[in-house]
Length: 178
Image (cartoon, rainbow, N blue to C red; front, side, top):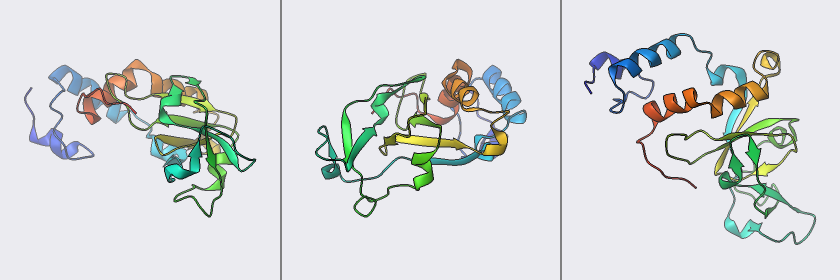
């Protein structure tokens, strides 16, 4: 693979994509030039709750313990509750996240740390679940929901094309998962 200086300068992260061949570079250029960026249609793309492990339990001790999703609970288009609960007291949590994230009618939950050739793993949450820092949460702006509803965006994030693009441009080709 030959890296060109211009490719480095045009890359958002100013990195050299060692895993991209010339045909892929042409395809990715077409994608980049005809793209609506996720950041433009979202209210937030934010990490889940950051909390000390002492607030997480596999037992619901009282009504302050609420179900908590982790990255490993998220599969393409599917949420598998792993049985963990969090003592949800906003004053005790390190970073509880804004309440509108948790009360949203829908949101997309994405595994934050993944790997392999399908690094993007996303599912739709319509049960107002809480999730841990091993996830990212995506909320779409109201004015974009008719064009980019949650099902369309989730399908794109889980698609082979977007995963191929992401894998080739933003990973080191590892198989790391959490």
